[in-house]
Length: 336
Image 1 (cartoon, rainbow, N blue to C red):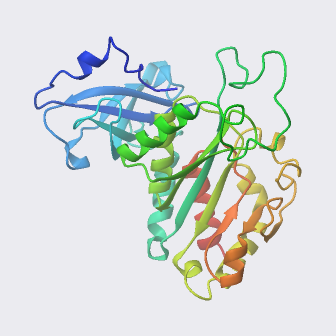
Image 2 (image 1 turned 30 degrees about the vertical axis):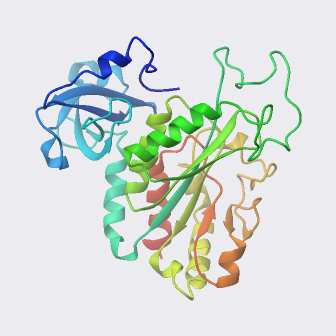
């Protein structure tokens, strides 16, 4: 679903009106429940640098981010994207949340992740996130499923094409194009194994920009839910010839902090990481080449050529990407 109303016949004439030299800036932030909020301000001229944008504020007591007696929470612009809903010079502004005393709000995981990424900047950590999500109808059932029943067994739906195999392709295509227009580094889409389940991939993105781009892609999609968010990861050393030894060393470090990673890899992940349906069990760590039932998968072509990247298959669809990318860097690059 779109964050804004559809451009129907009533709205379109007004969106076509000239807005002079004014620009609408939609500030977007993550609330106290892991959702997204936004509000708009008018800027006097076209924005070419993030420094032109002001620090704004909002009522944190209404977003589970502050008590009522001290409710002001501040929005500090962190990244800018083009606005596909309003077009023109209008922009979307991803913002970090800060308390009145200047400390990051408890929900601001970007602040810590940015500090971690800055420490390892010379190692050029790259990420690619695979966001799975499921579309639901107004009655709460998966979109396109028979009312009161179930579709046929899985098999024809993954990367399917045609009636009865994929649902809501028009919405998926609209989201894809909106991401491209906005500057989100979306790298692909595909229908998933369950009817009404889709996936989009964002990346490769370096460092903190991974979280920025995934959150904005989620904002453009609207309400979402799903299954997994597989995390592809590499460093400069891993991507160069001989990099397999660095991949193996990283996997060894990850094996020693399995519980710490699971703690930030999404809510209700125990319902997904059962050891079945191409997942490893939540209670144990495993790795393997081309093994989709392992915690960490090394793609076959990576093992064959001796360098590249690895895939962490444990993160759930509802992760905060700042927490996942941050702990990945901490474990593999900042621990002994």
